[in-house]
Length: 336
Ligand SMILES: C[S@@+](CC[C@H](N)C(=O)[O-])C[C@H]1O[C@@H](n2cnc3c(N)ncnc32)[C@H](O)[C@@H]1O
Image (tube, rainbow, N blue to C red; front, side, top):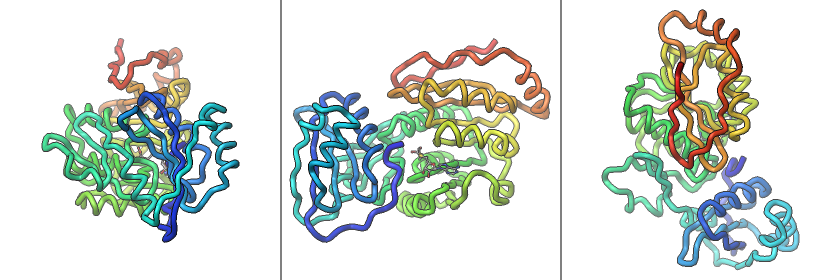
């Protein structure tokens, strides 16, 4: 997925940016996703910004790239028109990640607004600002999965005052920080990528969210998860396969009635993810569909009926379809 990256070092010399007109916001997001897939984030940062003549996607390189190769890569990812439209420009020596972040517009999702330092002063008083630093890991708020999780979180926090929160695959820490800023409760955040965990810790400090503890861990195998369980809110924006593998260990860590937010799922993958969690008695409560990505809110069985509910779930018919689309809206799932 896009944006997942090591934190690159800041170069001293001139850098290069390739810009591509993208038109409307949706087209820019699609291009951003496509291009972020093909460039190694230790060498290039892909961002999008809204200008006077529509959206532009920019690829900032930390060293002068082979322009023919870049055009070929862009052509493969986004087609020949995009490759031809690329315009390269050499920038004076500067912090290239910072420059790219200045082009990253703040992203609103419910009460939350995710922004870089550059936009710190523009956060309105009635919003919960989450400032993401210039070191790169996934989670600037621009991706449909992150925005979907923030919308789901915004919705859940209106009705539930979760006491113990777990954010698996925290990336920049954006979701953990969002939950902690509102709940002021302990949040455990983990990432399989050591550098992402480091970036998340930096962002936790930047946002003065001391109730967030970030650990470097693959999956849920270590004791540190059991020590902090049971969780009544779990956020996991990863991908279908790891989410399926996490279903069993996650179910053991859930409090009765816990809510689980799953994301990183293409709309076509939502049913498969749901099936894995239904095996453990979790039920689909709501979903958010954004830019072709599904975010699911699941509810764990209440009280000690967990085991019975899980058995019943194994005997029921296939799950309802998850294919309906609603741009950025929350959809409540009818329960029988
Ligand atoms: C799509 S990003 C989500 C980042 C952030 N939570 C957000 O919503 O923007 C997924 C993150 O999950 C991490 N990840 C992938 N598989 C994992 C696993 N099995 N356990 C923990 N983290 C994992 C990746 O390193 C990456 O930082």
